[in-house]
Structure formats: C-alpha cells, structure tokens
Length: 270
Image 1 (tube, helix red, strand yellow):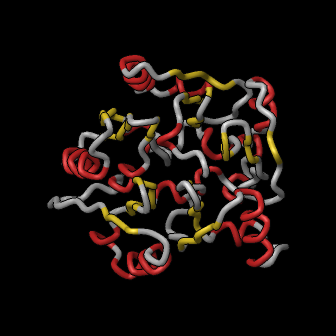
Image 2 (spheres, one colour):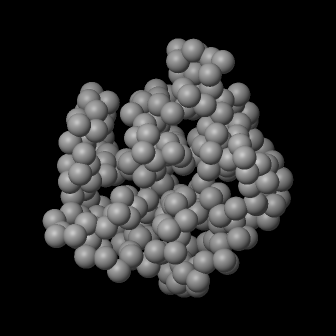
Image 3 (cartoon, helix red, strand yellow):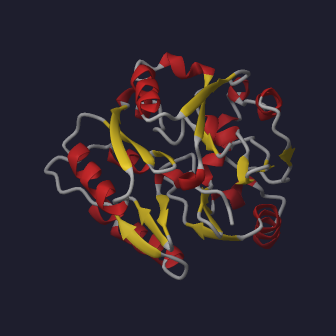
C-alpha cells in the first residue's frame, strides 16, 4: 500500500516560501491544527513538490531525474534534491526516469500521471517507461492525457485522490467537454470519478487551482483567491471529504506564479 496524503503528518516548504506574504497565514493555519512543518535549504525555487522524492512507504523514498523541459533555459532553477534529502537524513532509491513530482498522484494501490512523461523520456519506448515506473512505484501506473495548454504537464492540477476507489477531476465539464471525455476514458476503468464544477457568471482563469490543495491526514488547506468560485469550491470539498477539517487560505500570489498549495509543499509521513 502506498502512503497517500491522508497518511501524512509533516510538511516541508522551500526556504524561498518566505517570498510569499501568504506564508504567515499558511504557518498560522498549520500551527492551529498542530501540524509540523519545516523549511528546506539548498532549494532554488518554491516548487518543492516537483523535485523532492516520492514517499512509497514510511522508510522508502523514490527519486527520479528532475530535469524538466520547461527549465532547460533556466538551469539555475533546477534544484538538486540530494542536498535537501541529506539534510533530512533521507535515503533515496533512484529511478532512471525524467519526472516531476507534481505529475504523481498516489492512491493506495495506483499512481496517476499525465502522459507528458513519454515526451520527457524520448530515448525509451512507452512500454519501457511504464515498466520502469511500475517497478519503482511497486504498483500500476494509470496515464491521463496531458492538457498541452498547460506546459508543465502536472497531474496535481487535474486530478486528486479522495478515498476508497474515488478520485476527483477538475472542472472540465465547465469549459472543455472533449478533454473531459478523454479524462473520463482514462480514469473510469480504474476509479469512480467525481467532478468539480463552478456555476458563476464570470469564471476566473485561476479556478483550476482549487484542486491543488494540500492535505495532511484529515486536514485540508484549500486555496482561496477572492473569487466567486471560492465558496463553491469549499462546499464541494466538504462534500467530497466529510471527515476532514477544511480551511481556506488566500494564495492568489502563488497561483499567479503558476502553482498553488500542493505545488509549494512536500508532505510526508514521519
């Protein structure tokens, strides 16, 4: 069984998280809910999710090659996670696949990711990539289509694990029916699929980011932006996660940089 967000109890951020004014609210929320947090040294940007290893079991951390195409002209922003892991005394098991941690969604017995991973590893066949990853993760990998309008190809802005056999996908029914159908075709053979949707007159371009929440155990920190969708997102999450404490934190400054709460965090079970 893979460790999922529900099993985690500690969260780390990059030391650069202090660049965001909202970090004071994030920190206060974690303290109110008695959740431990730490700041990682040796990081070169805020997006710790993308380069830190994947926790498989309590003492098994899976690494990968963090060398994304969108940073090829910005190599100074590519963090070497080895230094971070050494600081935490975490031993990492390597996997020879170019990957971003934001493209990994864990359920107890499967991993979901976009098929952008095939583009990132052109010297390997699709079969070889799948084989290497399933050996590394120790479970089946389910591929969803990459929405190429989003250059990063991260699954954590598209789908999240809920519980049991349920996942929730973003609000494609509001804006992109053909892509929604592709998502459903990829996921419904494996999962019961729930969907977000927002009934507003003037939809925000940032409303994709509600799904990029941070979950630690039965606590969920949900993005807020001061948009009409905020309340609808909260009510839908309360329905999806009825046993969780859900708290909204305004993080517009983060989403304007291209990510949200899951992107800037790395939660593990200690």
